[in-house]
Image 1 (cartoon, rainbow, N blue to C red):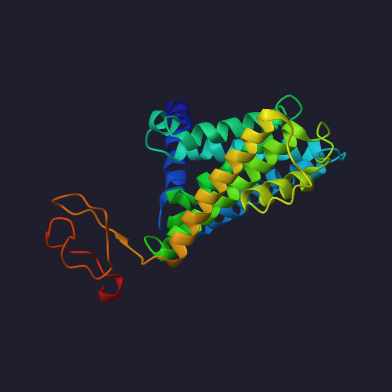
Image 2 (image 1 turned 180 degrees about the vertical axis):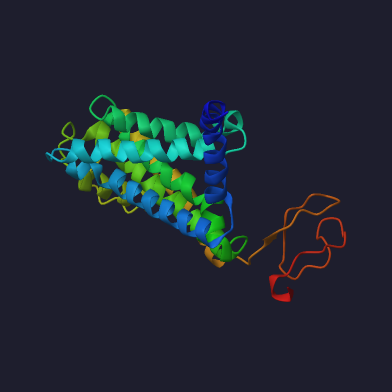
Length: 268
C-alpha cells in the first residue's frame, strides 16, 4: 500500500502547486497581496533594466544580468501559466506573447538586440493588467487616477519605444545621433514639436519617422490632458442603449433616459 501511495502523491503535486499559485496570483488574502506586491516590484525592476540596457550593453556584466533577468522572467511566466484555469486561454492573450517575445530577446541578446527596445511594452501591459489594479491600484480602479495613469504610461511607453527605434536605426550611422541620449533628445523635441533642428533624420524614411513621432506624440499628449482636465465619467453600461460613460451622480442615461443604478462606494 505505501508503494502505491507514493506515485499517487507524486501525481498530485502539480495540481496542488497550481492551486497554491492560483491563490497567490489571484487571491485576496494578505499573503496573496504581499506576494503580488513582490511580483510587481520585480516587474518594475525588470522594466528599469530594459530601459537601462543601451547604457550597459558594452559593460562586462551585461550578459550576466541579461541571463539572470531571463531566468527570473521565465520563472514568472511559468508560474503565471500554472496559476491560470486554462493554459490554452492564457496563451491566446497578447500580453502572453509579448512576454514570450521579451524572454526570447533576453535569451539571444546579441542576435535580437535590435528588437530589444520593444521590451518596454511590458510597462504598458503591466499598467493595463487586472493584476496591477487588483493589487496596487485597487483603491483607484474606475477613478480619474486610473485614466490618468493609463494615459501617462501610454505616452511614456511610446517615448521609449520611439527612442529605441531611432537609436537602433540611426545611432553611429547619422552623425547627430551618437548615443541613446541623443535619440531620446530627438524623440522628445520631435514629439513636442519643438524642433530645434540640431538633429534631423536623413532621407524620406527619416522624415516619415519624424512625422509619425509627432502625430502619435500629439495624440497621446492630448489624451493625457483630457484625462487630467475633462470632467470625470464613471464606467457603467446602460442596460438599454449600452452607453458606457456617465457622470458620477447620473440618475438617468443621457442617451436613452433609462434609469441607472451606478454603485457608489461612499454609500457602502
